[in-house]
Image 1 (cartoon, rainbow, N blue to C red):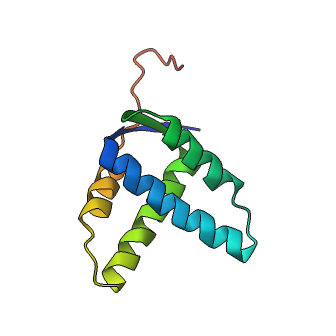
Image 2 (cartoon, helix red, strand yellow):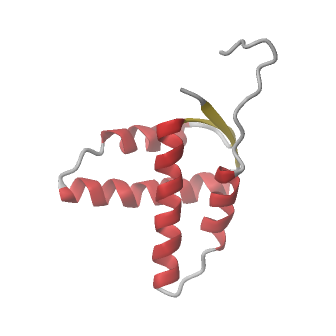
Length: 104
């Protein structure tokens, strides 16, 4: 399992939590498992703006949530600037380079 490191500012944090919360409500209402999304929301909320480490599954959840939020705002004729910026930062997330194979 690899992880990615996203540079996250306060705006990215807010829009990412909002996007994940929309998916959380949607899955909870449909009776699908939603615990993983809830744990990710709590972890992002507890993280100070700066760098956010995401595992592969968390990265996919965040990417899909931001993309869904962006699509909803496009469909409703709203602005997508914040969602676009957060999605761009997420897509630029890098896999950390470890010179001698050491990981934390």
